[in-house]
Length: 484
Image 1 (cartoon, rainbow, N blue to C red):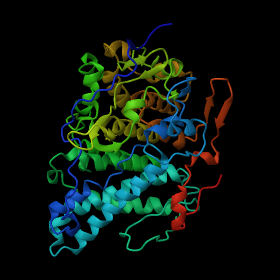
Image 2 (cartoon, rainbow, N blue to C red):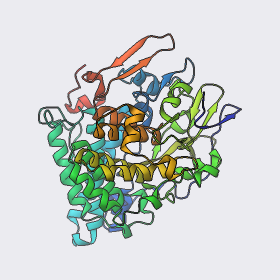
Image 3 (cartoon, rainbow, N blue to C red):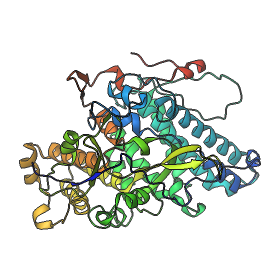
Image 4 (cartoon, rainbow, N blue to C red):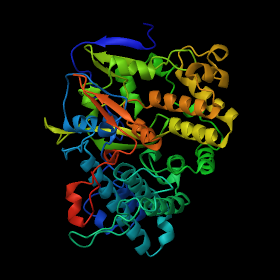
């Protein structure tokens, strides 16, 4: 079988880099932060207004990117989603942990907004207000994406949403209403549009750890893509890169990255200095430790489907590695172990996660153009992507055309062929990052999993389990569980 990837056997079971990360964890607010009487103190609080939890483990395990290896790490956060069951675990990397992290982030944003509004000179706090609004919108957006039915304009006004919290809690066990997905989306849009007008990049020492302008516009492209407002996707994609310089802001997989060892890629991929990363967040997670070793993960068979061939006829430049004979991974997200104290032998594992990237903006723009019938623009973006991802890229032999797409996929409809190409490229780009789940939800695609004994499990388009269960702990606030 032709091999379309770089394969290097790694002995010894574990290749985890503990390389340093500049400004990996923002400084926690000190004891005076509760006063919030200066813009600097509000900015410090806003460092905690992002969900510091990882959704990748459970999101990836629900997709068609994984397979039962028959052995490996059997953490419930990986096992339960593979079987399309509610996750019984509540610790890091679980849906409940992510839910709590989102509402913790929302609480920080609401306290920051309250401080901005109470300030004697609120104009001095406009940048902080902008960041707080956009951060609040993002956390609610991710909650409704996972814990409610996926946005559908025909049912959103009746589908239960998630509580949209706009005030700091002042009472114990406050009760909340879920309202509807449509209401939740309206509130997200309101916060997003108001906040993006106030965002200022010069307000941050390291803009990529905060909602800077580019990250905010990138968020808007995802929000409107999910809402199927394709013209607005284009509007905000063009604002993300007003000079249309996506090329210089993409990951150089087939050039610079091609020469790197796994350790160097791990140290580079989620850094603020990597221009492709528009927004980063630190998450308490063991994903970097177990990404290749989970029992339900990337296998030889699945990686061949994702990375084995593509419409260009060339080879993807992504470096694929493996432990032993079954544990495959592309070096991306690694663990950073933070000791409890300088001399401690215990501590907490963290993974820095890119929440928005240049590549996602490109894909969102391409998909919007496909629906709007701008085929030449779609092809331009697909060929730009290929030029950064295909080994020894040659425009004469690797250039993507509609004829090439029809021949490769056997699809006569141009729009469908372009969409399939976008989704396949996106699947390859974000393998082991959880993005595939969003596309499966958007297109209501069924997912089929098998056990190592051959037992089949199918998640159909209308399966109630596609909506993650509301944590039981949230029912004390009057939040109704999702039907099962």
